[in-house]
Length: 137
Image (cartoon, rainbow, N blue to C red; front, side, top):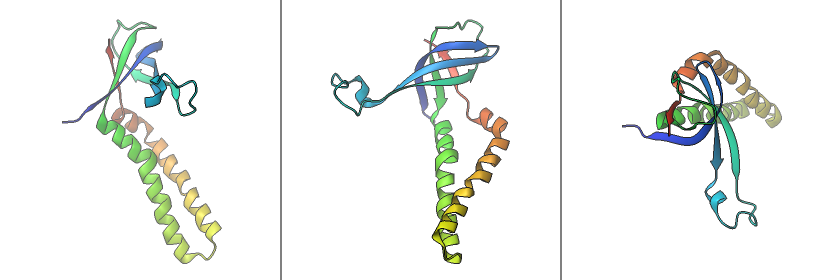
């Protein structure tokens, strides 16, 4: 049984089946009464594009964006974990065979270029896998 991830937001644009939802992402301390005096408070606006066939949606409607937690885990794996392991592994291997650390580090970092190019080639497949849905409030 997978858990759901929900974010509240409102619709800012509708183009056919594509609906853009603005969500406000807040850190835990952004709702604190002392946030004006504290530099740790953080609030950020994000825009999420969601495909929906619901004809009753209008600009300005409050909605929930819903996704599965497995979707978030896959996104973190592809965006952060695999690139980190790729850099780390290649750095250790190259460091063993190359005497110059700068060259080893540069080659390790440059391996991210083909990795992200390969990810972009699978963009359509990933969009199907990493989808959100809209629920009206």
